[in-house]
Image 1 (cartoon, helix red, strand yellow):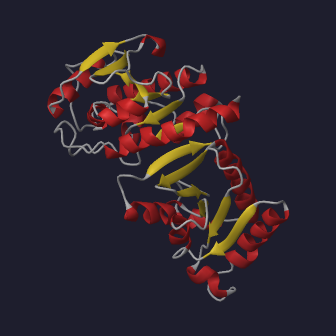
Image 2 (tube, helix red, strand yellow):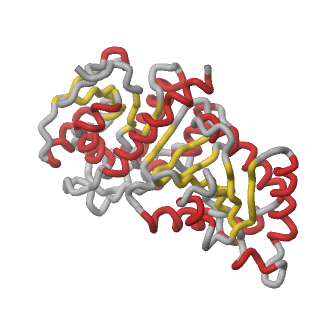
Length: 338
């Protein structure tokens, strides 16, 4: 019999027209994932059954109304069926208001369960921003949805690959605007929030390396003065406050150093700086964690892959990693909330 104390992870199956349902049934059919977690899916039963058939997976689906009713045994997938997809209108690989609305409702239900203390974490699959927009969902993506529905202002995004963690000063803004966003005030605020978030994950006194913005950190202002004007003053003030913060460290070195244990986390100063560093090492195993919220959320960090949806060839490894990270951090996160 499997350990009944395994963390309970709720998985919204994602946009039905994408690969989310396929990677969900694939991941939850793995003995290892069943052995470390109790997972419940919020989704549409018909789409999940179709995904299992496409992927050639022989599994049973157990429809429940509450996580307390789950079986959580290998060979069975527990599902809270929202029954919100019309088979006559459904099509793989297409932007759809119906699917955008459905994907939002799966997330909404998952957050509701976690906020009520009925789940230890949420591990999300994939959604499509165009489908959300077509459905008039007033949020551009996962982070914004989680922020709004948990009452969290400016949730932080953190990547994790193996033991390399990356916080992002900014996310979805142009590179020009992202450079302007690199200010002393923003860096100090982000590090303070990131420090608390890392503590929630069980890292008691984290070491944070701040990446440089310009080549060679600007060479003392020779080609770019953001380091001298904004980054160094921020690091010095944080150090005076007692934070173990270091930098700026050249962006061509700091991620390698973190991967080799010098830092517990790197502060990336813009979106692609950290994305490239982690995904070049291992695209599929790069996991996103949304920090600073009252609930724990991990996620795959790839898209809906409309071009291969419905073909049964999508790789579930990223969702497996997201579940593993949720299981890893759930006990410490729970203690931080008690």
